[in-house]
Image 1 (cartoon, rainbow, N blue to C red):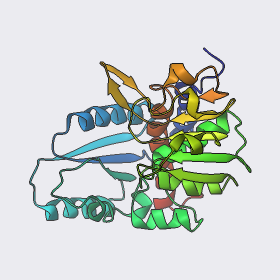
Image 2 (cartoon, rainbow, N blue to C red):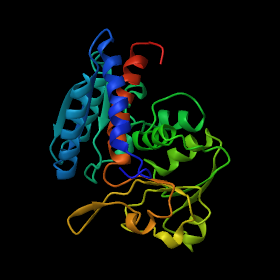
Image 3 (cartoon, one colour):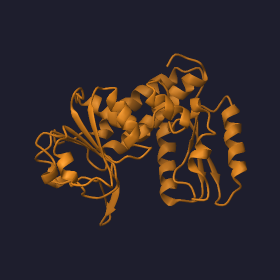
Length: 282
């Protein structure tokens, strides 16, 4: 494999092997519940992938499926039931959900210690207060990849394109903990290339194919491409890979870069959640 490629599959495999060993030593089997509302096809695929990944390391997986237009209170009552079930380690709400529901309202009913997606306001607040909690899986996966490839972040210029609650904003805090200098760009940013050319590390998470090309980066930049786009029947990222490959120091491919790490960090969070709910050292 090209020495410039950040291999998310390999890194993910190593972490999962360690998780499997750790889980085998726990007093009981961790159990993860994925709540789905509606019948989004992509969500169903993601759920099946999570099920396989969870079971591969020894986590028991449950899929709770509600049809569209179900009364909100039924969903809330189910979440509360799972919160009180001592066998259940982690709970997540599969996103996206139908627009008639308030996504954040439902997520906030999840016990913060079982919130394996790190999306409750409690865990979000802990993150930005520098306290230990459960952290959103994709940003955590990005940090783990950078650590695995010994990318020094201290006093480096990191440019993040994308300001979502799921990825961009949590990354700000995680990178600040590494003493990076951070700039945020978004859909309203003008002259994007002027910002990206200053990046030692460029993180792109907007869902816009081939947004970044070789003319927008400097030599030896490290690029983390979180984008997932369908183009001519293929999955591509937000970065024009073939255009930039000769200039970069390191780059994540799409697929095979950040994606595998997102699922692996979910498994990592299930183990952490198990320890939190069972009052074990994290």
